[in-house]
Structures are given as structure tokens and as C-alpha cells.
Length: 192
Image (cartoon, rainbow, N blue to C red; front, side, top):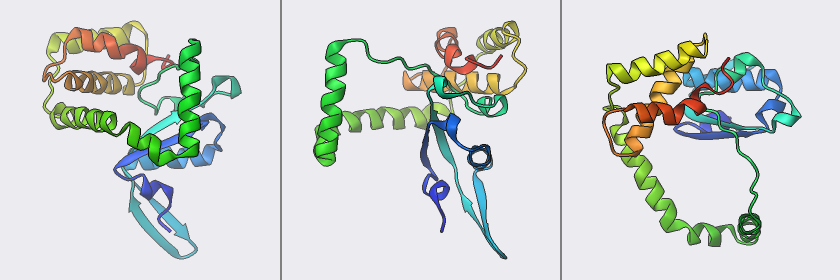
């Protein structure tokens, strides 16, 4: 069968507790993400499938770390803290309970919001390829990476691509220094 990686083609693949996966499993996922394809072999039979996806991993760092070479392959990193407001925590519970009792009803309740966000994201995707980074702005990004003494070229790639996407989400076709500063914490976190 084609498997999970083929089903993720042109979509998102979310791996929960990515730090707890066996090394060979995460290596396979990362290779498929980097190459856009993978090969399944069963005895003398082999088949290659497309697998271009956005990889999202989540983990609790208290349960263990990722190997440095795997950590470097993830582009943007964010730290999510638990909800502190009693009202927010109660609302999170209510939505979870609602989803567990009737997933379709909850999906329907947020259908308009979902369509709006989908439209915003699609508009940004349509222009991202035409967003430019002026020389002075790219120099700022390179200087940040240099000051942090980061060796991996993925830092610049991630930083600049994220800045372009950030500008596109704002409907702009030119990256400014504020865009670089906004995405820097996500792009360079844990790269040293």
C-alpha cells in the first residue's frame, strides 16, 4: 500500500511526540520530506510514491530531546505554553468535549472562520513566489545569523522564506526589516 507518507502528499503531516519516534522512522519521514518521494520495498517488489508535504512535529521537551541533525531539519520552531486563564482553559475543555461528542457539529460551527483563514492563506500562497527581499533586509538577516554564530545554511533559508511568507500574509510583495525581526525567533531558535 502507498501508506501514510503518500496520503500526506500536498498536505500536512503532523507527528505528535516526534522526539519519541524511533530514529529510523523519523529519518525516513525527513528523507521523504526533503526528496519529495519515497520508495517502498517488499522483497523483489518496489514502488516509488510522491510525498511533498509540510512536516509539523510536536513534542514535550521534558520527555527527551531530538538529535541535533533532526532538530536542524525542522524549519520554524515555536514554544507553546499552557493556557493560564481559567476562562481559556474552560473554553478549551468545552471545545474538546464538543468535538468528542459531535465532530461534525463543531466543524460546522467554525466553518465560516475556517473558510476565511483558508482564503487568507491561499491569497498569501499565490503571491509568496513573487515576494522580494531587498538587499538591506537580507543583509540584516545574514548579520543576525552571523552574530548568533549559526553554521547551518538552513537558518538563512528558513529565515528568508518565513519572512517572505510573513510579508505575503500581510498582502505585501516586499519584505521589510520588521518581517525579519518577527520571524527570527522562530527561524533561529535552538540552531546554535
